[in-house]
Image (tube, rainbow, N blue to C red; front, side):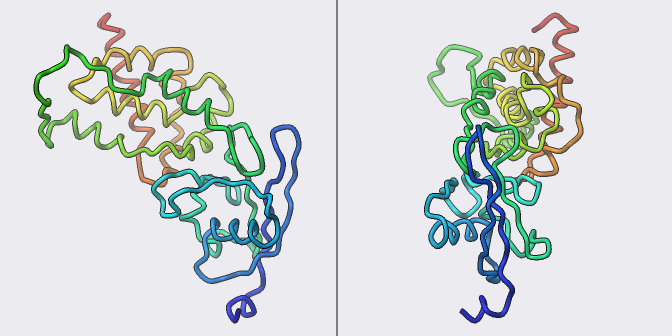
Length: 243
């Protein structure tokens, strides 16, 4: 309780409502040292508004399900400390941009993951079933390229930060294209499928290379580089008639 008394409380404005109607509702929250935005939301739900809807699972920056727009930027609630983002003891929390709102801070992610399917962001074997495991050396250039992209956990922060997503509803988005690039660099994969997806309407060549996705990625993936790789490979394949 001493910590609560020592610091002025936070004024936290949280989006309440659904896709049809909603508004920001302000709550006064104890300003405790080291608390995260997820801690703030938990306090509000347990103390002030039991009906507040939001998502979280792991609480340690592994699942990405707690991604929200916090003071205008997409972030993980569990890894964002309130004291680091508060402005004059005020914090604004909204759902992620470019996602339909189900209720309060809970976004509908179905269309986001459907884009992964459209980007063919999955493994497609290039040959018949083998009798033994394929062995790919750790220093293989393709494997290094795949490893650099594979750690995306699908939190949607890059999608929310991308202005091209907001301007073009057909754009597959950085996460889906990054996944396609990771699969494309698996030497066991039928690589043409990912390149055909990259040149479709809304594919890799729709990206304006502004780098917003790279700047906000919580796990440090260079998605802009992945998309550039798809652009380069798909253009080369098209010129050679190999798509």
